Length: 458
Image (spheres, one colour):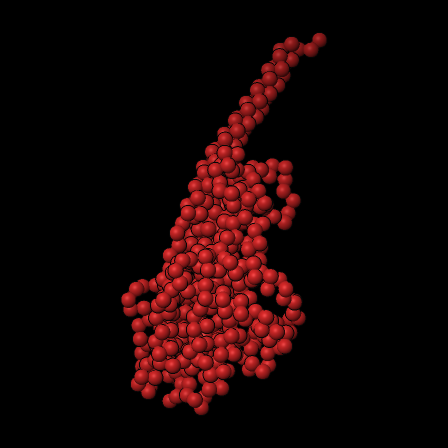
């Protein structure tokens, strides 16, 4: 017969093991339930903050100085809004051009080739769009900014302006650069400079309230216009230079900080990617455009999401908002102060155990670099106007650069220096190595064919 004592010991041991396993499993379940509850609380709080920020941004009144002395009453939205259907139709009707033709058109806009080299397709597009382009440029002269319906970042994704409005307006900026070239060819230097300033004003206003996409379209507009504007400034009259100095200072002051676009992105990104997960009362509290973003958005991660995706997505939204919130103020810092800090936040996102966190975090240092260049382009144009005005008045180049912004400080003014080039030429160069590709070289009449050398790479 089996030893009863031995059997009892085995039974007792088995019960002990089962008890330990049961208690461990119970503790694990309690821990998981607690973690899930805490995540739910954090997600609820993040959702409430998201809804609140949507309302704040929707009601935010944006301000900037007008770049003209006699601005048009009202907002940019009121002036440009009625033109948007025409602008969309114009852009939609434009034929798709071959890359070689697109490159040839860009070379003419940038002054690398004369107008005689402009392809017929681009000349036809210019003739078709010129009257509407001129009307759109006038919209930049309003007293206040404000985007037409459908263009702000927090707009219904299905609105026609949201789908292709920015691209249509970028087409207007390209036409404006060609307009400057034709006016210069016709000897209308001051008119060309006025076109340039209105084009810069239009691109400036595209960056107010439109998130990162609008901020980058705005920066792209300055890149497109920069070469033509430098030519216009070099040929302008003393009176034209004086007016341009005032206008450029106002344009620079009126550029929307990148942190504003980041703040809008801080709301749009989570709402678009995770909005479907918000509680019903949170969705109901959103304005109509916000609900449309949440309903139509989705998180496209490019990989198969496991069955516990809702948990990952809730955690990803909380982390995304936390990390991106840390980045918002950093993008307005100088490169030397922001690079390491942006990099640290980006590495934290990429190293997250939740793979969705890193996927939702773009390279914001790249966007900040483009904003740096946009500001530097205005500073260089202003420096060019001041230097040319000095030479027109005194017959010689200045030995030092006059103050760019003596009355009011601007965000991150570009440090520039003057470098004499022989007896007849002067080079204006950014001191920052990362902006060294932007420079202007001014020369005498005999050097006109090489008087200006500009490279701008975002």
